[in-house]
Length: 580
Image (cartoon, rainbow, N blue to C red; front, side, top):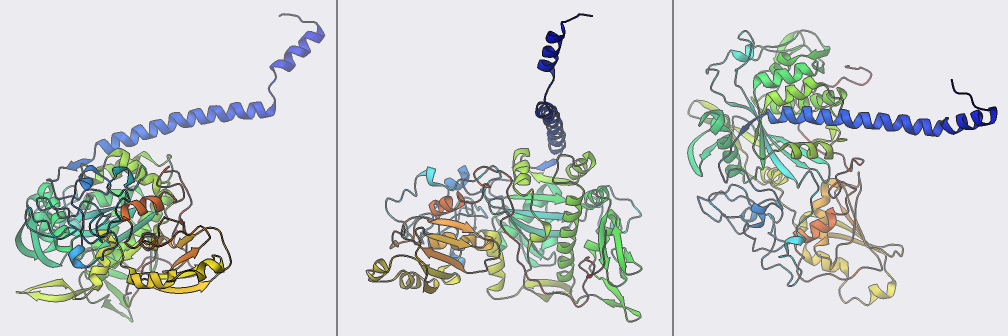
């Protein structure tokens, strides 16, 4: 034991003793270091799981190039200018034959089903409407997307393959053999990481149309049968090409899930809680809910619910059919279930690195992806949507009619513009000026307004915008304010201005676009500026999502409207009840 004089001992102990702030910093540092080690290990676990996912190599030209990619940059340019319309002639991905240019704005190429990305699909990224010398041909002016990339459209395919199913499961009792699969669920999913927007649309499996393969229509059949052409390895690309060519929708990626994979994921979530107002059943799918109230559906019961095509509810002392069609109400219920399952996934910690290994492994074991969906892309998309609420998912449905082909009941698209407007959401097609309502508030000096030969409101009205003009309080800055789901309208409006003003994305603003003119307002251009340039400038102002990829508050709420069936089976409890 070393002895110190009293004065030395006290001084030494005082020097070695840490203050509480020092101790807190030390503990925090240790915890942070441990967290980094753990997160690294979790990412390694995630990487190992993702690397085990089965991939399908898709023939060239089936999947569309993402906006801003090398393939998109080499595509053709439209001739209608940045402010062109979204009429059918300008839709992306003209079906055209092999090598057909497919319309003024099609990217061309050997039967490419999609244009070279979405940007400019409603008028192109060049052509006669371009402003000379605006720099639109400079690759540096392309939209700057964050780590999660530009908006993309995915095709979600749920197959009725019974491989891996319990032979006694009703889902395994099918007319076809287990190695032959039909597309039981077909959904288009559109995600925009920058705006934190996601939209989904179910395509009825009984839709009757030409089945395409290698740019050639093979035969006319129900859409579900496209997977049979070449089996799952070649069938998925066939289904993608069929959807792309019939509906002119560029598809950038796809995901395939079979029965066994679906059951496994739901079981790893410990089931999905659903509320039923009445007892329901479907003898064909095996669904049986004997009493009303809250039920936690396991994987098999969940599969029976989403597959139900002849759902019956016990009402008034007898079983009654829910709905009148085979596919439409089922598609609605499938979208309801997806939202409930996403909520369950979030509840189970999907937004945290603490998410269970079995959830990661179940997800990886249950899907087939295209080769372009890399680990980095999946992580970046997940980060961009880390605070996305499942109820914000925008939902769409197709207008279809019952029809009879031979002795087979099928569905066909209803004539009119309604279907085109829905498909435009997933095409990335931009708006026309006459589809944009502008509330113009002029906050400039009175002498400036009085010196104009043609007012800004009249100029924009002449361009086709629906303008409601009024005078406002004096302000120095020009600002465009818009709701998240109308961001494209803000870009279209900014194309008519000599420079892109401040763009504010405001939740709950409605469908109209507010244009506040300030003292810094320049002027209006004779021809619309290049859309890619304007979009890049507008997206750069989004709240820390596109350029940095950092977590930020959600910038918007989903909006949707679907016709409801007479007996509601959306799985949510009535007010005053709970379904844990």
